[in-house]
Image (cartoon, rainbow, N blue to C red; front, side):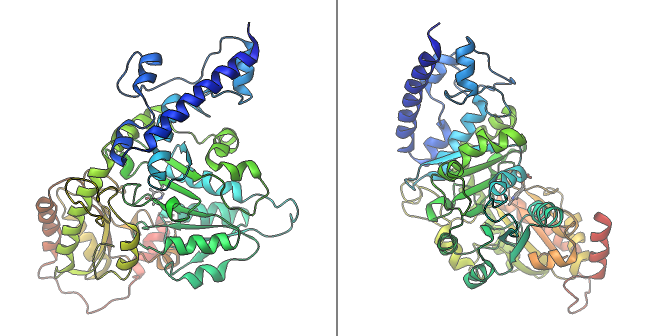
Length: 486
Ligand SMILES: *Cc1c(COP(=O)(O)O)cnc(C)c1O
């Protein structure tokens, strides 16, 4: 009856209230934001029957009072969750908390879009840059990204972008080498992309310096920070434009569902002629490309993630401390060739990681009272004796789960060469530094002594075995099994 204007005015008032609430929330500590996010008591009492936990809106769409409200909503003139492919209140609660946690301590305004998986988060983050240059449609397109990336990312970049579409992936092999990044960029480069710490190789680089290189060339830096989580590292603060996470991993450590997120700062750097995209990348992705492509998260998975995120900081502290103990145990073990963990002083990248990976708010909590480094719960180790020896050890675990999974509250191990990284073949694994005898280990919430005892059980299977002094890093057996996996 009162027309569209009435609805728009009401939306402006409500948006103001929410913005004010979020501004206050942003002043709080990391733990407080993780627990409450953007779901307030006022919202619960006014709209959600007082429900203390964020309700799961298992619904496809929203109904409108009249044609005016529908028109304003579908024209994006008022906030709406018209259809759950685009928006949904439960999704929105997850996006709100992750935007705040990722921006924590930076003073930056951030926004987020949740996606159906980590892989779709990567697709969401990179596709808007891989568009035809209208002024020079004949020019080839390339992007520069670290070779040490998650196996799925490797496939998306190598197969879906490079082989299917002719978009060149220029691989950074030694990501700590800033000159290597710089030397790969030209006027057709659309973005820089890095996974840090990488899964499973734990590659790491000087984030702030790589961000400077990107911005000098007028392009964005995109970071996959899944392994660190915002409790240990927040790349936007160091100059990154966009951060992605596989929400399926540590953020949902209980393992109840697959999800992803893209978080961006306002006004990102890009050589693409699209002002709306640059102004607010996550919101643009939500309202346009992802509306059209449809990689949305389910509201149920969103609430599962929310539930685990509440205790993220204390879990990352415990997991990291236990992982450090396990890494120290393995490092001195007679059957171990080497341990990759950024927390170990022997790791060549330890000093760079030390600059970036801190337990958030440790300087103000009542345990540490100073900034403490924490390096997360992903590590890997190489077993002496090659691929078969690694399989023997792996098969001997009784408590540590054999699965291609990580980020769990339960300890999980995998052999990347025969699982997550099998499809990329021997050459790809060589570039990503994934030898056959590498076991990736995700340390969960169990007591360190019990994890060490289980590892000891597996390793003791090698007692008395005699191996050749040094074999080739990539055995012929490894290569043929990779072909079978394709
Ligand atoms: C698992 C993972 C992904 C992909 O996430 P999904 O949720 O499995 O699609 C991306 N990056 C990293 C570092 C990962 O570990």
